Length: 224
Image (cartoon, rainbow, N blue to C red; front, side, top):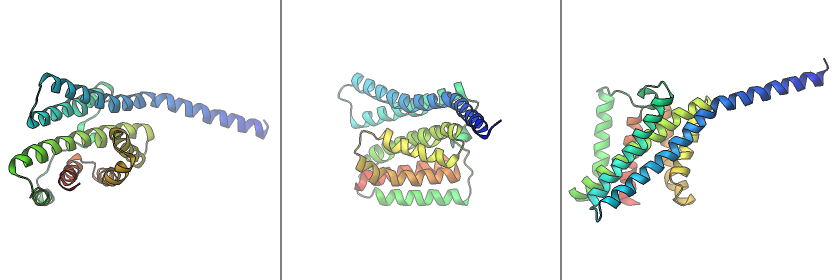
């Protein structure tokens, strides 16, 4: 067999192997598209439906409706997809048991201190509605979906954790927030997303990223 024929056979084998890998990963790719697009769509539909049913809703009701819509779209829906398609446990998507130790106590103290400093200019009613309920529900839902579920699915496709975290971060910044300007996403959302991805990559625990995401949202609500 000549060298050119061997090269052709090798190239054919490589191409065949690549095609087989693509076919194997098709279901995961479809699942990611379903989770990302479906979650945003379900959340939006739920919120619009609730606001339509409750005419002249108060600010408190709007916040509750938003939190409920995020729960349905960003948490319950993705869990249903994962349970149907994969044999997974919640620790694989960053939901871990909390151990009470010195480090946890230190984190709580730091969080409360930062929170107090950021919310000094609010009255108690504003803190309850805007800072606590709205921002924490957004942080929990977005971290669960993008840092947890989307990264979990991407790791099955790319077989490289670092790349999966990078792609999930880009989806979070430029797909979830596609309604915002490119400049705003680059300046305000990309840097904090890089930090959140790095922390989750290192610790694989959503509690830490949720707290940081929440405090960042509080900061943005207060000063930006």
